[in-house]
Image (tube, one colour):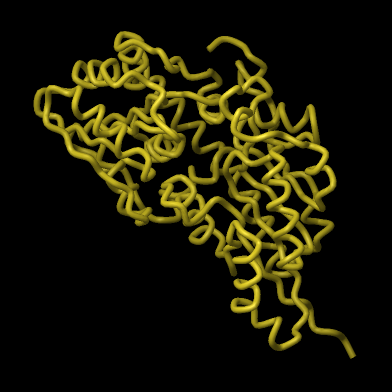
Length: 368
């Protein structure tokens, strides 16, 4: 008598439920592109309650294999996130932890490392599979302290595809600006406003994106500096609506990482207002260069980046690289889907993805 194969389930772990567009965007990307069986809360008490109420296996005694999926965000290497992963794996009785498209802070990132301490030894002790990371800086950090992964891109690059959202062509589009990064924007609103006004046509609508609750104050400060009418779009939890609003833009300037990721994924000319290595990591994965706009940037410097973003050659190259990264992400997603469907074993899941691993220029601190 042959035994029934184990049912397989996927539990997603991320910084969800806090009103942040980027984190909810990642979750929705995985829900639509792969499907998840449960979403782990970030606290242990909530996890225990979720386990008791979610899984039929606990009531029926059915044997179940589970994967804990870390599907994005700058979490790799951080001590607190190693604790979150280890605890969620215990609570959900995960057989394997898989990371795909997550990122790690660069060793020189004073902003990120000032918020959280790193402890790579905790990550080494996890029973994990690192299928791929967001960008080349993450790859370097992981290689130095843990293991060598391929660069697969930010998972949210796939959201417009799995959600069926296209950029609205035709009209020039509005000028989108996302400012704010907890606890406050790191850019001078007067300089950003001057650049936006110079870059926009007389009739162009200016839309300020509050992609997190803390961004509203930054948007209002920028609004006060603009000498043109503008409106604030607040993310209210509806990922599709906010993504569709970004799709209307003819140009996007974004301090929030996933404002830039979404715009690039949609083919909207994009200027990242970069304040941490996660922004550099993503931009390197797309262009091979670090962003040219950093805190302290003048209006002239921002306008220079706008000119490059609008250049047809630059746009074509970015769109081509998005296609490459989507192919890599698809390889990882198919690997996970094959595991859930029972067509591959957990050992086969651990095999390296067959993707290129060459670093774009600038990954080790080269030209910005």
